[in-house]
Length: 333
Image 1 (cartoon, rainbow, N blue to C red):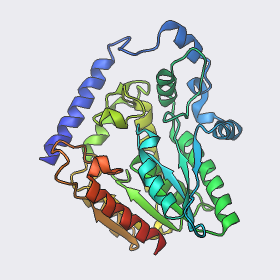
Image 2: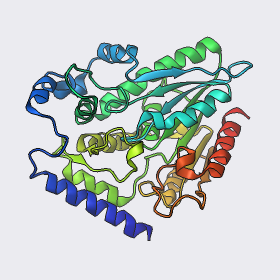
Image 3: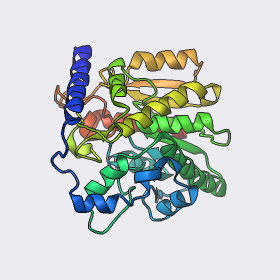
């Protein structure tokens, strides 16, 4: 049943993608005036080469990072970097952030380029259009730069407070965080919590690679609209960045990643195969990785999006509370 669903998802996405090749303007596309304004955006011509200074400027304007400080009584117990998934509204990570804050952990939320407020803001250009334009010009290196600069902030606070560093990430965010951890000798997380990390994919997902020469093409998403950062869909540029991140991760992943890690995954996940995740952990001898199999509440409809396991709305209240108890126990006990 799952394989059939995956094949249907892939075929629908591919057929829609190919049909879009012959469409000059789709509903919600930029008008001529907005195209003129956006043509001068830095990401439209040089996204992979954006300099560190510009990224710092974007971050200083709260476009890519935001601190959420714990007001829990007692001493600070840690600092955590939280990273969202592909085309997921960063705000949907708030339930995880809130639980970490309640447990005495300061959180730095990272919004990758093309998500949340992390796009170039221009007068006269609607935010949805500007965000999507930024999303069409992302790259693996751009996202890695953003993650690295976020880590520097996290590490600075960790040293100042004398507390451990944690990573809590979903899907693409898990891949970006792990890629950064593996590739950068100075990056270190003491413990990690990963929600359906995109470090292994079902084979049908790779069909998107056929469209890699068309980075600005937008693929409609199968996820519920309320979770989407860009409702029109996900550009091939973002998939290209994901695949490159995965290639880099596969090349560099090694013993360094064997830190206490709790991995949440639903066996029916449409994109991430549980078996391949476990096989990877076994091959790499990541014996400190634990797998928590998510079984969603019966109240959740049969046609639920199984990849989403990041809040009570996607798992059911009882299951979510049990998951959060496991998170706190893993990080703090």
